[in-house]
Image (cartoon, rainbow, N blue to C red; front, side, top):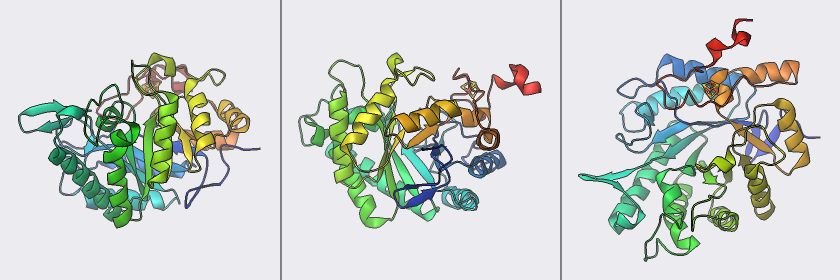
Length: 342
Ligand code: SF4
């Protein structure tokens, strides 16, 4: 029998549980980018809760990226020193921590929001260099790994997607070509660091001429072959995938199972589940071994403590998304709940 709180392997790591805290964009950073005491407190609460692995909120490669004005960016001069304090704090609890690297828009001087076909080869080299430098900074800052965000609607998720990439050179066309920029980034990071490389990948999408599950499987195989150490399968922006707590007909679960059948590296099921019993049922009825959660950690960074002690846990989170893109990592529904005042 598998259980959420099994100690389990994940690549070269031993995890305290099968739960991966995944990050989005709540950051609470100061205006100049510095880490606030609230960030350290939040990560310590999560690390101490029994979580298996922490993946940070998005850390953008570019300071004026549009994802959220509160997003972390690596481009402030105390980032490595302050991030090292954060990783040291998390490691006290024997929890590995990965830095999530991404950007949404690529801007070049007055040219804004360039897409795949707008990039010159020099632009591609610049993006690759920025990722590699970012990875080296994360290595210096004590992170155990990085997550390259190829999912949701980040720039690279569009670059690898046939419905966005219309290039006719070696960086467009077939699957290998569209993935080539990422594979080259992975190769250089592997040569120069010991970082675990996780890739966050959309299950598939429903856009016309977009990624099918067969193409996602091909991408997963290529990522594994070229050095990715694990994957996280996530939802694209499609209503089909937002089926809360329904493990009977959840296309994200079906896609993750299919991908798992084809590759040997660990694969994390993206978020959406909020019940301890449902997750344990899922673990035992499928080949899925790791489940990521994000919003439940916003609702209560320590909720896993209660789950472990009492069992039969259920997150308060209602998946309302009111906490998205806010300045503080705060549940905006919780004070209204009768449970909150018990
Ligand atoms: S604001 Fe909504 S989505 Fe965010 S933690 Fe609270 S209930 Fe969950």
